Length: 382
Image (cartoon, rainbow, N blue to C red; front, side):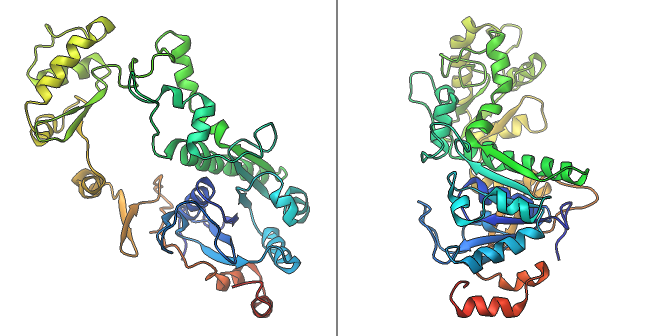
């Protein structure tokens, strides 16, 4: 039985990769009833993995349909009639060619929030161009500022474009639209582009640039991009790393004291001219002891000094376990649903379903079992 603050919320997800499934996962994690419309045969996602190991597909039903058949399209429109939201991540025009563009969907359900998630948006010179997370980071200007001085820009996994700038932006947009509908407004298209989301996250940094506190041309030479010696990671005697981030003067004093330095005589970390000397001193001192030593020294302090944990270490760390940061789903540890809610907590996620295994879920959406059997007999549905 579903639980969470979105219990009663109903959404349709058109199968895709990356940010679309992540947005649908977040809705399902928080209690929404989500049906994923899969293809009869899986597409090429570029990253092959065994069925059941795409964890972003957790917590929702999968219905596989041949959307080239009008009866399959009619079924999706019937589902849309009872949905609060739809998420699609195709190139512009694909949903229209399927007969599932905004016009027929909003005509069928004027209260629908129709989410369109792309890299470039629905219009413009790049709208039909393929791309991935790194593509949008490059176009936004963000990638040019990631990495160390003198080195090539650094790819930060695919967390910024796909999931923060794409999936989470879509969730925020859909929930805002649904709130507007429930306040008496009309359904609408929510156009979320990863280029928009990545650029939006630069608002605070743009303020720092305007104030002269960050030089966008000096990658790896600024306060927050590994340029500052007191906002970086250092190797320890054991080969592990210690991350330090005491931006405030009082926290810097705690760090320096823990490392055995006299804060009064240490090079002034507020002055860039002192950074090379300070970095050499910090690196030498941290490298003289193991990561475990520094973890003991700084445990419970405000020095903002933290061991750089491996994923396995993070999953077993006592503080993370106390937070219930990880949950086991079908034998695999995964991040728990977030955020947390005091009155309507989310349930543990269900594992990713086999593709096309969710036809039974259609009954709760008002679809007659005889219709499902007929679609299967005609091989329109798995």
